[in-house]
Image 1 (cartoon, rainbow, N blue to C red):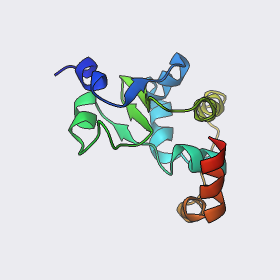
Image 2 (cartoon, helix red, strand yellow):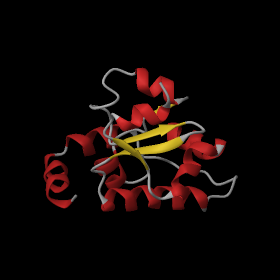
Image 3 (cartoon, rainbow, N blue to C red):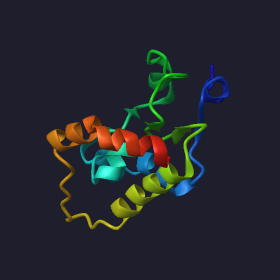
Image 4 (cartoon, rainbow, N blue to C red):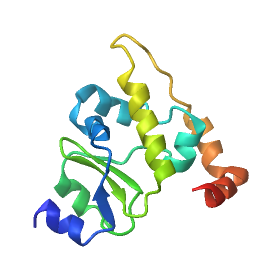
Length: 136
């Protein structure tokens, strides 16, 4: 089956802001997705604790329940960034912010993502779970 077939029967659509697709087209950005995803607390709380990256559409489609139960946000190398159909405008803006930050970095700039301990505390923090429910 083609990727179009997978998308037709899934809860996913390509992200509407085509600039964001550079995250999967550019080698440097793709490395950041995998190694420096958690840049700031709201990003982690609303977009997830790690980027769900796949090497190709087939790899994504073969993942168990990828078509219905996966992450709100999927990055497929050299293909597209996919979001769930109900991915809100606020989440879209947070994703755009991430892209904007990366696109302004110099090749020599070093960034320090949040530590795994900090990410875990954010994800488990009851106040953040509540804020998530009422904000987006």
